[in-house]
Image (cartoon, rainbow, N blue to C red; front, side, top):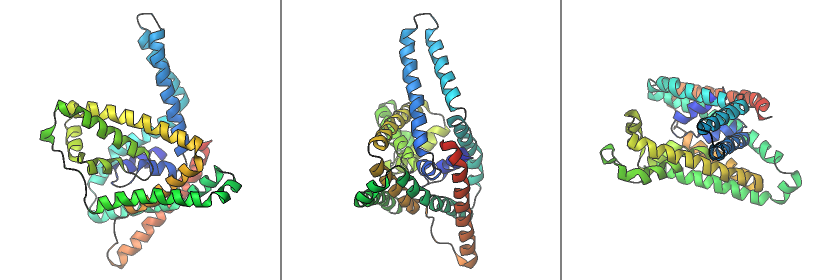
Length: 304
């Protein structure tokens, strides 16, 4: 269920997968578990040089996959399966929605985020002793405002259509490997950060059209450096976020709360039309809030 929600979030413009992980209460666990997987990859690299026999490399890779499967069969793997299912099948459903239906779809996500905000404040208090919260109340608000301000800046870029020059498919060449690597790294890092949509960042950088066309045509000149950039970006940002949460939990989580609140601006699709439009909008927001509450209760079992 969580994987399906995250997968849908990845294909809804303006909705951040990182936001959904925070709203569903598993952001910290996600970072920890992905960190464990990266540790397995590092161990595999060391083992390749350690095993001297002919098939030592294959043996090391096999051990890595076995360890990852055994440790993640009840967490990351089900989430990944749900994401793949949602991205493949739900994307087809979304492609046939009319503009009015897209509006209501986004209102459901708006309700989902709204419904999860109280849990964020509860999580913030849980991670910091109550006396520390009282002493650092001003600091908490400052970092929330910083997070919100960053999202507001992205919102202004979005509504004003501001971005770098669009790069066309006809410009694609091997000489673009480094820029594509950097775009992939930035997009991946943005995708993990709550409140920020990776696809929107690619759009602002001017590479969105090139990305969609290249992927649809399976152009390896684009895909290989972009995919390597994504892997490097995810590894780097997860290490940074894990460090910040471990060493500066209150400030980091306060900033994340600001990101999530600011993401409401990115998801807000505009006002409905007519009395019936407002009625349906209220129903959609209520559905999102109820869904958030239900999944939060379900995810409490996963967090432990």
